[in-house]
Image (cartoon, rainbow, N blue to C red; front, side, top):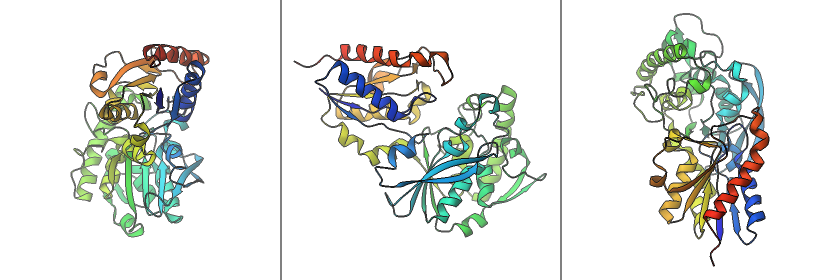
Length: 379
């Protein structure tokens, strides 16, 4: 039996590589005759850089930038000559991500994308001209205001803006001029890698849908929605493009909109990762594909890795199952995307400081036992 193990990370508890290695070890232990190929995946969220950088024959570069609360922060990015010469990969989660904050520090009125702009500058100084930004895992809902500020945008506001402006400053912006960015980075091409093609405004937008996980209370969410509505009008006028209706504009708290305003483009992160890893070729000839992530829910359908893996397997006629941290019981589209079975470790997602973390190895073991029982060895 040939099995491809291609999970994403279990956010807060394990990397994609860690999950893949665990599943491989347990499968080999319980079915030694199985041939297992391990291929951890990512979708533009945290983990994207390390998933692809070695395949691209690139290198990890150490850097210093500001975190979401403007504290100096040691971080990294990648430099590579593939798929284009003078390329870089920056993971927004590493510098402007939720992982840099304690739960009590999460406040998207205060957090800023400034540090991500600093990394773009650093990569550019080191010769990068094609820069891909993995936008998943951000702590911000600032519409990319801090990012544009770091790159040198000329901003007029109702009152003086601090270095590292955040979500609370969006309503203050009167005018923004991007010419200095175009002049100073005239040969720079920016691509945002998104894990979900989220809209900017509304019920499923950057503030109302993603605000709660970034620490926003209901009053904060409405303040951010009003601020984003205003900032979008200013930025659309500057760029000459109506930004609010462009799919993906709301990615990373509106960073997608900022990239579009600069003439950049947005791609599904999974597509880039799958092409880089030659995932379809690795899948061909397998009898079963195992994917997974920390939480399989409605957002998984918007371009996240497990669903994308399953759809690829379905196209090739290969059964696909998912081992997940937790499953939203309201999901009704599993068969439609090609996921025949789901093996949940827990009833709801857990974090690294949860007391149930110690149960994870046993839960993985139980999941693999159930999985292999459902897919017996062919005689």
